[in-house]
Image (cartoon, rainbow, N blue to C red; front, side, top):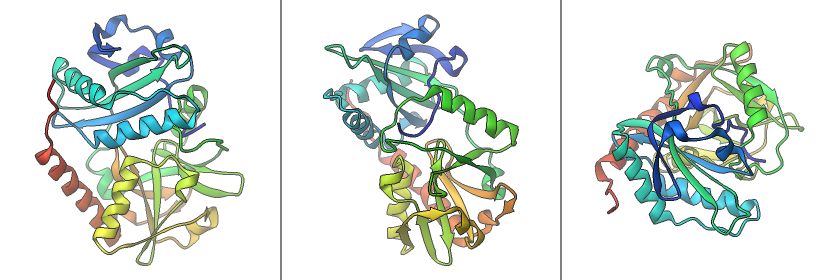
Length: 289
């Protein structure tokens, strides 16, 4: 049922003073866990950078796609969501933080739409210079393109990642193929080519799409194909992509080490993505309230 990720049921994950529910503003202290977990929930997480919600339209389009993939006919009002995102940024005086949108109660005439800020953790600067450790984790998913809350699996994965002192878990399916990270996409570098799992097998991340566009712009070949675990033996390097980590080199998968942070293609993409964000922020037009 999509990428495994944690539902914000734990109040310590919800941050800052205000949240919005169905166009109304409330104090975060009054947000009840039950309200967020009462039924099937679809969500998006958008990174706010210098008061700008990065790639918000793409996130909101994917939110609508997730709802459709689950068979619901509801279509959220994108312009209203944009206005409420900016209301929440203004109310909470946010510069850099992650905002979460949760939609549930699809059996009602009008579903509930929650917007709130969540505990946000970004990789330290040195990790982009050294890379991060990852582990392999076997799991089978039935609807990888829908971004659906799966609380129990997320909690289990968090425990396993912590036990191994890792940053992320790379998911391995029933065919022994690496598909994606538990909360990220993964790319491999082999010679002068970028290799990643087929779009049909993963939750297509917003950052993933942008990285592929940057590869095309900079003349870097990209191949989508099934990636057996054995490919780790021949890869020159690999990296994660996601809302919070951006492009993050991987230094190890289990006990196998990589010099990904020194790979020229990965370094080039990291710098290009940072420039892309800078341009996006500089050219962003705030919607009218």
